[in-house]
Length: 172
Image (cartoon, rainbow, N blue to C red; front, top):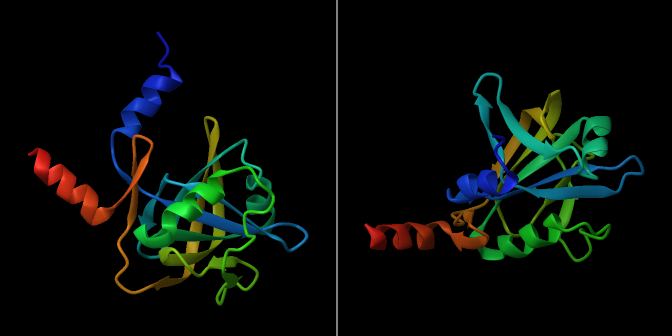
C-alpha cells in the first residue's frame, strides 16, 4: 500500500523545523523567492548547502537558469511575516520588503529584515528527487545578524526557538 501525502505531512510536520526564504533573480533581473523548510548543510570544505525545491515552484526555472541563490534563515522577530509572504503565489512578494543585491553574488537578492543570517550561493548541481529538485549551492559568503532567535514551524504554527524549547520542557 502506497504512503499517502497526509501521512507524509503528518510524520514530518511533527518535527519542528527552521524556516528559510530562498531568493534568486529572474531573467529580467527581478527578484524572486519562496519559503522553504527543507534545507541542510552538506560540506564544510568546500562550503556547500542543500535546498529542496518543489518541481511546481515558479521560482525553480529562474534558479536553474541564473545559477545563483541566497538562503535566508528567518528570525522569530519579523520572520513569520516573511515566511507567509514568500509562501504565497504572488508576483509582488518583494513589495514593501527591504532587500539589496548580494556582495559576493552581485545579482542575488538579499533580504535585510526578519532574518538571523543569510548565505549567498552559486548553484553547483541540481538533482531530480521525486516531485522536487535538490539544489546544491556553494556558499560564497555568509552573514549572521546579531543574536536573533530562530523561527520554527511545526504542525502549521510558527514559534520562536526559546518559546518552543520552553513548551517542550514543560511537557517533560
